[in-house]
Length: 197
Figure 1 (cartoon, one colour):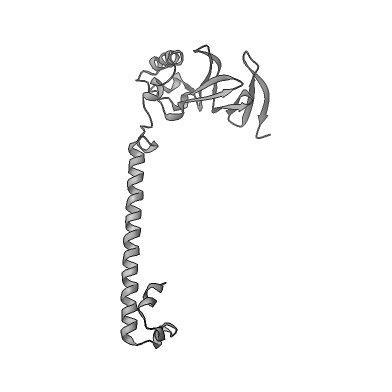
Figure 2 (tube, rainbow, N blue to C red; figure 1 turned 180 degrees about the horizontal axis):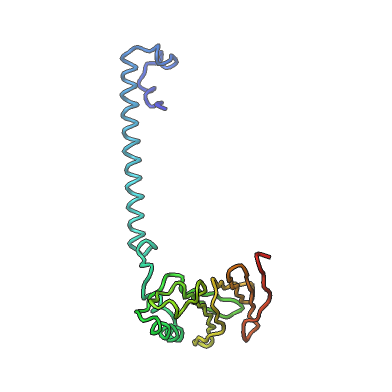
């Protein structure tokens, strides 16, 4: 570990174990090792400080740590057609529109863009306006020529957009899952799986 100290020893002391070396040489070696450890500790502290500084810079540039989890910007960033539809729900909720980050999820599949809205992530004072028991509203919109139109709506526990060459939807409701596939005009039911099978 302290091979640096060996340079300062006489040639005759190099091959002898530490306990057999003269006391002055052992003390000198101990001092050199101690300085080496101090410099390594100082280096580790500097490295740690640099890493902490890099993390602070990343957070200041808009990392997830600085994002407001429930914010109006998640609704305001939606395309105009979808924002209009959400505004109707906002009035029924009776509060300012705000949503979590994953309120809106989009995919591109088969050359088309689909946007899904998950109202369990929508701030709503009147929860009955968007949810029935534990099943909340989910809507899917299709973009066509810069406009968005609704192509699927359901109340469910969860809805997931799938890109398997063609767009698909997996709707989870309690213990069953239902799959839908885009046929070019609408989503059609493909299969239903109950209790995991």
